[in-house]
Length: 147
Image (cartoon, rainbow, N blue to C red; front, side, top):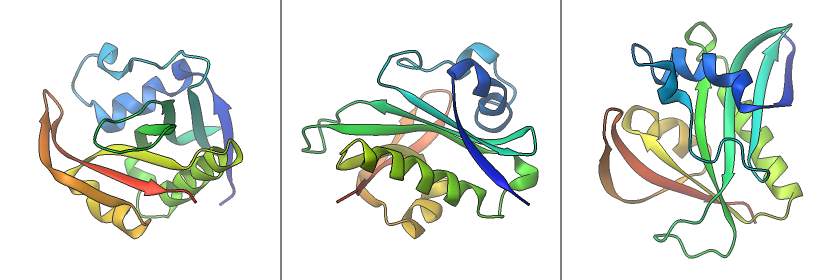
């Protein structure tokens, strides 16, 4: 199984965001503020010509994390039939390498409770208690130093 990563626009990954992260909700809920900004990056993971995973990176600081320039990782998704095959891990590492190449020192994300073990395995640290994102569910703030 050969996995390829490509820069894509937000429109290209709305379908997978919808299937994995917003199932049963309107497609419009898959659009994120900042999706179309020039300093936002979207990656898709492909097997042959099929998009099997995606992630978005948005230049955004977080008041709970003291860092001059950080990126928020959002919309991390892998199609259910491909989960457990390390595609998410490879996608995450690809995104982190891109940030490192841009001299970004820190990445953070709001993580669904069920995804905490995945991020911990990839050296992300939790900061603070869980909180609720309306219509999505409980999350925790996690971050990783890229230095």
